[in-house]
Amino acid sequence: MTIRVVLGWGLADPDRRDRAAAVRPAGVHRTLAGLLPVAAGVDCELARSMSARLTADAGVDALTHAVEAYVSRRANPFSDAFCPCAIRTIGRHLRRVHGDGGDLVEREVMVLAAPQAGIAFSKSSVALVHGMSRPVGAHFHVAHGYGHCASALGAPTDGDSDALAAGRLVEAGPSPVPGS
Image (cartoon, rainbow, N blue to C red; front, top):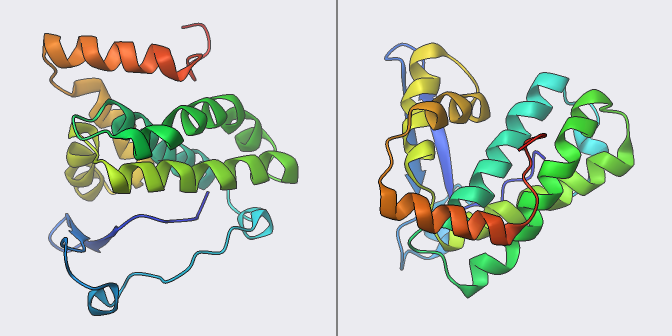
């Protein structure tokens, strides 16, 4: 769940209580971007030492990537190929890996789902929850994934977008939230 395969990164400035996000502009060659990796290693052993809290924050961040990419107005067939699987997988396994971080089978499943979500959101876009969680995280000094939870609770919506998003999420499969 620590695997980042997105075209962006963030920098924190604790003195100003701000976080800045940066993305590689379209058309800029990857070697000019400087900070983008050429490859990502996917290894559940590396994630084994993550605390339960870090596991939850990273898992919610990945789930948010998948959900926002899937309901994005810029969603496309390529990003759509990754989203439902990532949403279902993270929804089914996040609680288990949070409860038992040493379970390498659960870690492996999550470590594979997180890049799917990252690829999807890199090829579509994220939405208001991600945009709002950056200042929430900077101001309250909370992790990015935790900031998503706070941002999602207060995100303004409109009826047309809500109906489209709800329909897309029903297509994605069972809710990752127990009892819903």
